Image (cartoon, rainbow, N blue to C red):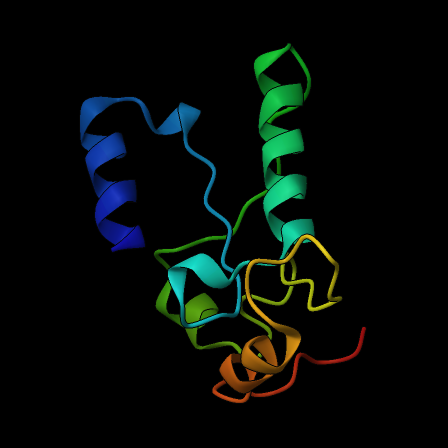
Length: 102
């Protein structure tokens, strides 16, 4: 679906307004509060005249196949504000290989 969003904005000439971030989680509502608030804060800063936030390439096959894909913006540190219980999030994360250590 992310590729469809990208293609649609590109076709309409609005892709300059799109930033996409891959988060390693299989459930839509399982983002951590840190992941969601970081993305929101970055978007608000951008809208207020700050730099365009970093994002992930959602189109290049080699990038998508990389063992590190989705690691840049994934933050598994649990917090009291998380919607998903830490054990559930850990079960979701078991679907992915571990992120390489930088």
